[in-house]
Amino acid sequence: MEECQHVVSSQLPDRSGGCFMLLPSPSDDGGPDLLLLPALPQSLSTGYFIHDFLDMALNQPFKQSWELLLHHSLVISCFGLAVTSRLYLGFAAVSLLVEINSVFLHLRQLLILSGRRNKPGTELTAPQPSLAYSITSWLNVGTFLVFRACTLGWMSRWLARHSEHIPRYVLMMGAAGLSLISTMNVAMFYKMFKADILKNMRNATENH
Image (cartoon, rainbow, N blue to C red; front, side):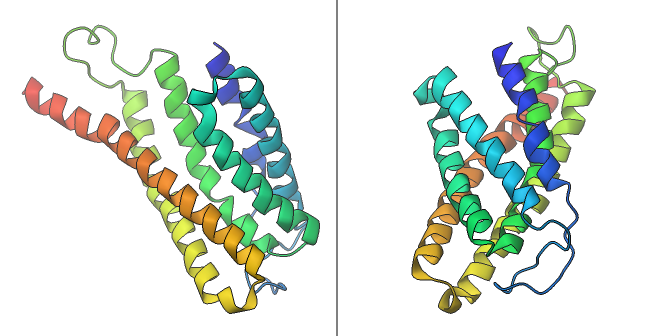
């Protein structure tokens, strides 16, 4: 029950930042910026990540949460830099596109925790995913590729192209953060694709 509450509570503050529309406009760092209240989405997201970090650190075993704690530490550092310096706000705002996928990622987790992953009556014989879980899985994979992989790829490309115009400490922070987060996302996608797509295809073949 506590896991469900944590997943639900993590949806609201951070997703509100991701709903801001990005419109191209000139900015000091050469990236896209927001025309209205440029630091608000990043500020909301930073507050959420701090809250979620403290919640996991105090209430969850370290062995289960260390990856997310590390992820949140990097995000808090990068977003904190953007908010306090009012630089790279457009770059930070683009990263919020990743959170569109997080909606389906958390919905998938809620279906698993609530026992609605498989069709009723198939759990003990030949597990078959429920319609809701199947739709969520494919939406999760699709939005992962579009909003996670493409966004992180664009951010890495932008950072590389502007490396000569960025302070060294900012470049190192961005490169370290993107490298680690990209590695974590590759591992997460592999586990998710293996569990949801490959396993379901194998079960469907065996049933036939």
